[in-house]
Image 1: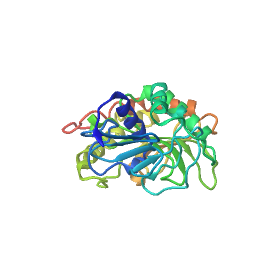
Image 2 (image 1 turned 135 degrees about the vertical axis):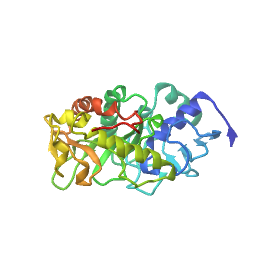
Image 3 (image 1 turned 120 degrees about the vertical axis):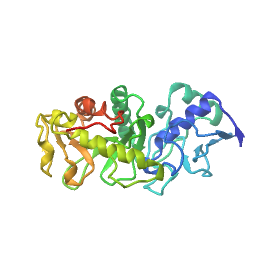
Image 4 (image 1 turned 180 degrees about the vertical axis):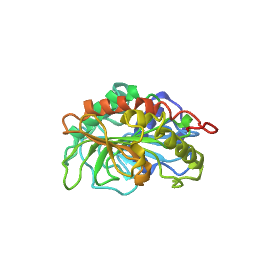
Length: 298
């Protein structure tokens, strides 16, 4: 492999980074989609392999990488997953990348192949629409596709900007269970106190504890204002909001780490519904960038 810092190679790395499951992110290094350290590239007539200091990607034929992505003409489920990393559950198609990256891939590894399998085209289309609608409302948040880690959902985990030193995330996509068919699903949540995936998350976890207290504060907390009830967090039970669908605030005393849990009325209204919920959360989201040590919330 050779070090390479071309624009298209870096764009491809960033695009494939978005495909890996949120829980598959490496245990060291940043969570950003830019290569960490030197980007090494190996090209063959049928594949491109990219590797930074954290992990390796391959698109096309082969399997010599941490995360392998099949270049296909159609959006199909490649396997039932998950094996952590390995061959990605969904294919990558020309529609999954930018026009510039699409042309560059075809020039370098050829036209995508047709692959037999269960179509996920409708899911891909819905997830693209969701991101297009919500990304302007969440500037500098990072987007991570989740399609095989949780049995009750698929969609995007959207991570707070790295500069905020926060573990807050928004999940947005589709959710279901034995009683409820697939429909829009959204969580506004933080990591549980003291539960860390990596040692370097301790400070973010501590600050998020303070931010949670602030959001639920009975005098000026942003979630209390959203509830229009400054005492909503005093009881360990869901508090229903006057928003479309079934949207609830969950106080920390419930021991369930989403602070907001919502389902739309149907799969058809998912995109517009999610935009309404994110708009309602904007005052709460705007507080997360603040380091609140030393401020009294009483």
